[in-house]
Length: 85
Image 1 (spheres, rainbow, N blue to C red):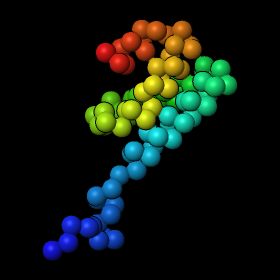
Image 2 (cartoon, rainbow, N blue to C red):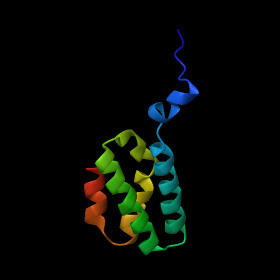
Image 3 (cartoon, rainbow, N blue to C red):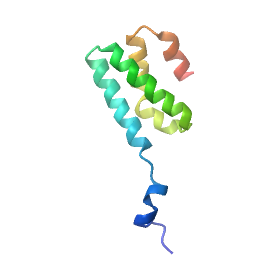
């Protein structure tokens, strides 16, 4: 008995979602560093919607700090507070 998935089982076992969240975190962080609030908030809103729909909050750690920074940069403190509440 093997605990490793076979190549034909990989699509069912592994998800690209963690990579999507990590990439979004990088995009948000880069936009915040450039002080581009519009781009940062658009990326933050998009990934937050996906996180909420998926319900897998463990991956939020890859984007949440930067999403909060984006919302604060844009002056939407209520959104930032709601995200971490």
